[in-house]
Length: 138
Image (cartoon, rainbow, N blue to C red; front, side, top):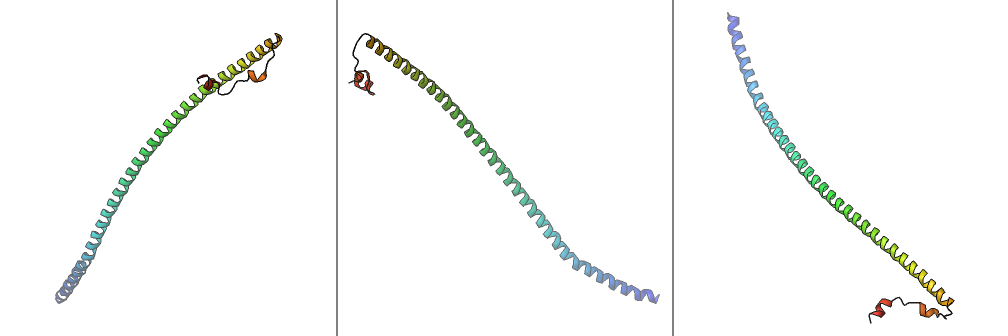
């Protein structure tokens, strides 16, 4: 029994030493857990902010896309209108050119008739000034 009593104080000393070692290790371990919790919270906050920014940028991108689409549609409509107007003007120009050609043919026909009747034609009398309409209003 003597051995048990000698072993017991040794075991108690070992247990006490282990308890103190355990307590000494608990503080740094608790600090590490606290740091880990802080890092988790910081990561979650950063992820949340990043997601908010992504959503905000996606919203801006969609708005810019919609605005660009609107301007493109407006430009296409203006181009279409301009092309239609141009076609109308080209048709008018063609009609006026045809009228001018017909009138020139008539002038030549009358000239031929006058020559056939023996009328002396002075070329300068047949030429019309370019501002004929302006001279008529005076």
